[in-house]
Image 1: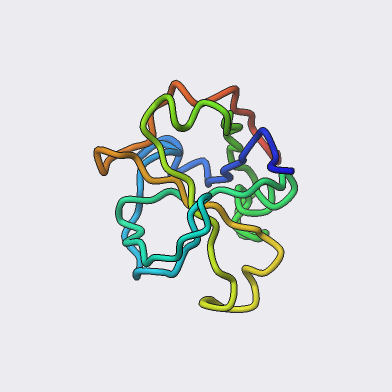
Image 2: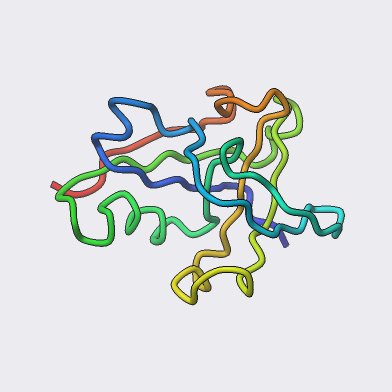
Length: 127
């Protein structure tokens, strides 16, 4: 069963300067779409999320580097309605630190930020 919510944890600085749903530049990675097909995605058009709230809280604090961060809760059932595709990251293609994430990359059909309409809520995490 697929979780109804996805979570994105970001530092306070990133949240205030770029927002939580703007893609950042990394290297392409292998993903499996919800229909089971495998492809490579350029993460410049993707935003990393996880179905695990605790993992998002960990990332919001930068793994302990920051005292506070922000967690954004996304409604997975609204993604298609707002032109957002979800791809599960193939953990065999990345470092072992990502194994527990069950990372889901969100890509907007227009290649930019994920529409704010998919946000359920956001909250401060840490001090």
